[in-house]
Amino acid sequence: MSTGEKNLTSRGRATRDRIVETAARVIMARGVAGTTIQDVMAEAQVSTSQVYHYFSDKAALVAAVIEFHAGLAEPAEPADPDSVEKLERWCRNAITTQIERDFVGGCELGSLASELAETSEGVRIQLVQAFARWEAPLRRGLRAMRARGELRPDADPDALALALLAALQGGILLTQTRRNIDPLRAALTTVMAQVRSAVITPSP
Amino acid sequence: MSTGEKNLTSRGRATRDRIVETAARVIMARGVAGTTIQDVMAEAQVSTSQVYHYFSDKAALVAAVIEFHAGLAEPAEPADPDSVEKLERWCRNAITTQIERDFVGGCELGSLASELAETSEGVRIQLVQAFARWEAPLRRGLRAMRARGELRPDADPDALALALLAALQGGILLTQTRRNIDPLRAALTTVMAQVRSAVITPSP
Image (tube, rainbow over the protein chains, first blue to last red):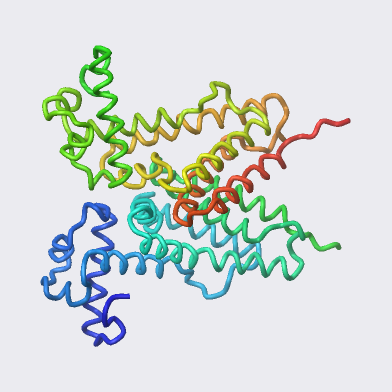
């Protein structure tokens, strides 16, 4: 969190948000290494003193961009996907999002992780936390299913949640590169088949 | 392929290889956007005229780096993994590689795809071809299993091959970020469980 973020006026908050959203857009197009604070200033039409009022340096701005994408990655629905139907909906949403984007852009958080995982320990930990916010509802949902006796005792909810997140990340990257939905669909469908095979069918 | 690559003397070939390997190393550390031809020249200890003798511009050098990683991604064993045992070995190799690297660096081809998929259509197609060289043995192996009647008729070898490649890409990215093997292992294990469930057990 950048200095003073909590004490911003609503106008200050709006300016800060505009800088972060602009930085997120520029970074998605050019990568972190290809983006300067000057680029963001020009795009967001803010002055040097405005940018440095909110962000001490480029690293602070990049941290805010990761936080921005981590927030977007959180599910729109507050409830955890704790049934096959809800997990299927989660997969369908991911597929629909990529189709609506014409497979362009990939996963913002995945791209940032790919570019930044080796740059600093602080950034790496922030990325771990961002992915964890994405994974947590899946893990809680699958754990709840097992706790209710809906999954076989030998099913591993944590491993299935990780496999779903990995299928999403790898699937989006291949779908982005190929410009078709097959990789993401195949990846998610395969993991979901495994989830379904772990479901205990109630005896009639 | 850069100008004249086919007509190089062995010394010329060695110099070109050194430039490409150095560029690959520098790009993995700093990204394509953060790497200049000057950086590569300094690291490889070659002159401007040497670099431009082999590569007309940075794009040509980046194309050679993608080709370099695509070649490394090809399996060491020429035979396709056309059994559960061979597919398991493929997975174990991927896991061992990441453990031996201390989870650092991620997948070179995945990182390049993440950074470059939107930069130019030519580069995107080169990345598609690079991933295809990785995927092809998996697809041929799974197709062979089905053709021999070892997989259920409703099993989709192409989807399983894509799911394995996606699990690998997403699993490596999460494993790199978290610095532990759990995501890659969970991703590959889950897809392989699905492969195994498609195997027809011979009747006794």
